[in-house]
Amino acid sequence: MNAQLRQVVTHAVKDAGNAPQAKRTNGHVTFLREIAIAKRLARTLRQFNVVEQELFVRTVRVTNLEAVDKPVAQLFRAQDWDVVLSRLKHDGQLGLTSGDTTLAFDDLVNVVGLPEEVDKAVAWLGEPSGEQLELDRSLYDFRRIFVSNPEIAGRTLNVDDQEAFATAGAIVGFPVGHSSAQQVWRGWLSTPTWRILIYSAENPPKNRGIVLVDGISGDIVEWFAEENPDQWDSDQA
Image 1 (cartoon, rainbow, N blue to C red):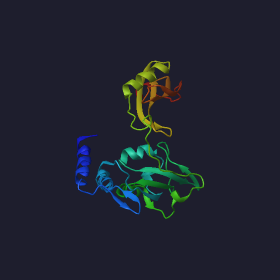
Image 2: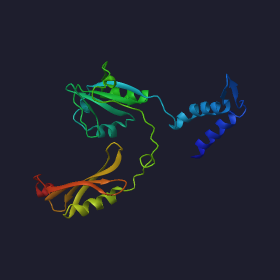
Image 3: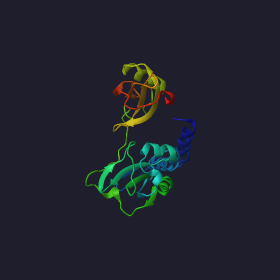
Image 4: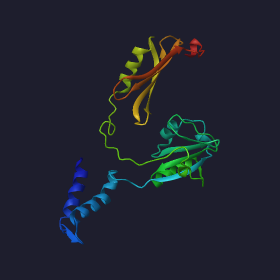
């Protein structure tokens, strides 16, 4: 617990110290001091995102051409959004978005987050729609859960990009030249993963590959290598 958060908890307990400890009503005991502490904490801890904040859901129709045919992950990096894009309706078909999803003109998409963040994302993507995709549970349902399993919550990225490059270079089977790394999230648990695009050292490169490296364990999730199908002139490589 950091010092500021510890101070908030201490003040909440102190402020509730004068509350009566308990009362009995119709045979039921109510612990008033504990209730006073809980109410104080619920009000003050919201600023630390420790307790639940109200989320807002809005459906937007994509009309901004700058949002079309670009991966959602790229849009998030460019616009610095603090929201989640959830359900997507494309050509009448309902689906879920991911970082690799590309939006099309006139798509409908759910934006979830705090009201001011949702408004910012909706204004850039297009225009609000009256259709409420979140109410359609014909294919997808949703639940709120409290994550308390220490094997899932608060996991730290243990593998940096240089370690991921070294792991990828050892598996592809050719001398490594140019390469690039992108951090993505994989699966329901959003496991941090390095996605390495790698080329061989020739000029122009004769081979290329893709390697996914688990950002926590350092294990190779999957990989693929092939002869480079791109035709490059030597003076342009």
